[in-house]
Every structure is written in structure tokens, then in C-alpha cells.
Length: 386
Image (cartoon, rainbow, N blue to C red; front, side, top):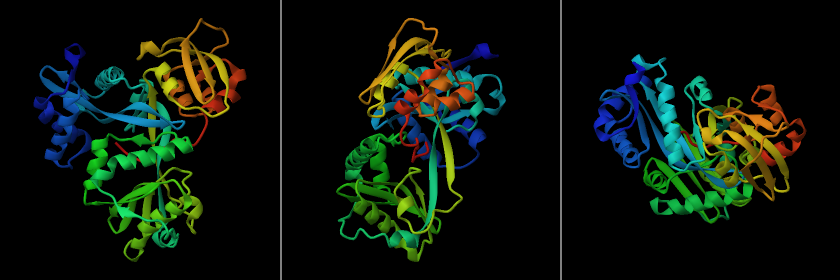
């Protein structure tokens, strides 16, 4: 019975039960000891939430403490991962109960945003998530990359001690590009990647690359460069493996300069994995985000958010000089009306006309161009799966 179910903090004693649910959800695979080691870090910080029936955890999810770039500014974001529900409890509202607990914990963590890769959109849309952007994987001929040049750029191998440097270099580039969507991982995770012997990392004065083998090909996890010459040097370094690897797979922004530099077009079968976004604290999310320079907006909003009641109400949205604010306001008959899905889509730069056509926005028809300009910018993307 649902009355017997409750949201709990997953404890170390619950991990065997959660592992079993994970196997029944995702199938066999993975190292249980490594999974358990990682799980303990989430437990220590109160970032592992579950649903228990009696003393047994039957559903669970982890929360990553990310930051995410929006309009070239960092916004704290709760990344939801490892969502599992035991098969005999599916279709009974357990997934929704779990995710409401996750939303509450994410709010308590001070995250104004939440993001995830959906196994199904039905559950997450029901709880206010909407598509925010994509993870783009392109494939290039390695011989094209090898010939890009950049030989005048000094590169060196990167290691664990370069983790903060990599974060700083990426931040510099994302701020200048007014990036939307890329993540900032916790420092310890970046350190772990850079000391992993399966990853090859090189750093220059204004950029770095991390790549690895993918069967007989190479795969670029991240390449950040602040200049044309460094861009060429880093891609050419990856392409130097052309004698063995015919193809380089790369996770990049959809507008990455490599698409203009490579002699041959990327493989037409580019892969896109879509991710979803949700606002947990609308005023804080607006205040933290960057907006298009020169854009000016003054408009009333009416937000109806049943799962995060603090978002519900009448607001005034103001955007000027690249910054925004959302303040409490009196009800207005000509306000732009949004639910949590429409609000997420707007935040991610979805044009208002698209939101209106999908039934996710109504009212205030005279402000569409100004709002689209303010929230617009580069296509939202992530490089990472979590």
C-alpha cells in the first residue's frame, strides 16, 4: 500500500537493496565495489534519496552538485542520476514519490535548477521538467584533424594537479562565449579523470583536451581552446593517432569551430542525446543567469507550479544590462502565464512562439521578441552524461 511507503535517506545499510534494484532496472554490468565506493560519497553528503517499504529501499536516486553555464554565468544545478524503481513497484506512483523527495532535497541544497537525462519523458514532464538542450556527438576523419596545424603552440601532458587549471580555462571560454548548458564538475571528479591512465590529457596556455580510445577509434570527451592556434594544436594532437584510428568521435557544442576547420564534413549520422531542465527556485535561477547584452524586458509573469509551490505566484521579470530579476508583483491580466515546463523551456532559450504552439505559454503576446532576445544565445548543450 502507498501509505506504507516513505521517502528516506539511503544509508550504507541499504546499498545491497539498492544494488539489487539497480540490476533489475539497468541489467547486469559494472563493478559493485566501485559503485558502492561512489555511493558512499553521495550518502555522506545527503545526496542519495530513496523510497522505502518498511525497512527495504525499493527506489533510489542520486543528486550531483553541479554548476551549469547559462548566458555565460554559473548557476548551481542538481543533476539527477541513477533513478531506479524496483519492477514490482512501478506504475504505483513510487517514481513520482521518489522524484518529489529529490526535488525537495535539491531545494534544500540551494540549487535553483535541476537537470537530468530522461529514461522516459512521461514521469519527468509530469513533475515539471522539459527539454533544455542536447549532448552532441560528431565523428571526424582523424587524418583531417592531424593536418590542422598549430605547431607553434606549446602543449604538455596534464595530470591530477591540473584539475583546477582545466576548470579555470573552461570557465574563461564559456564566459566569453556566453555558453548555455555545459557543466562544471566537482574538483575531485576532475582530478579523478586526469589521473585515470585510460584518459590522455594535454594542456596549453589557453586550452586543454581530454580524450581516450574507443575500440579502434579515439573519443574526445572535452576540448577547450581560447584561440584559433590552440584549437588547431589540440585537434591535431588527437588526430596524430590517425595511423591507428581512422575516426575520432567527439562531444562538442553544435557550433564548435572544428565544424568549420575540418576539410571533410562530420559524419552525417551525428548522435544527439536530449536532456531536461527544471527550475526549483525561479527568482534565484533568473538572478544567477546571464542574459543577452543590450536586451531589455519588463513583463509580468504568472507561474503555476504545483510541485514547487514557492515558484507559484505573480512575478515581475526585469532584464537589463545582461542581468535579470524576478520579484513578487500584483496580479496582472496581461501577464505571461507559464507552468514549470514552459518556464524551463523559456529559461533554456526555447522561442515563446514554440512554447505557445505547444500549449506551454499563454498571454502577453506583445513581448515575444523582447523575451526571445533576452533568453536567446548559443544553443544549449552538455558534453557529459551523468
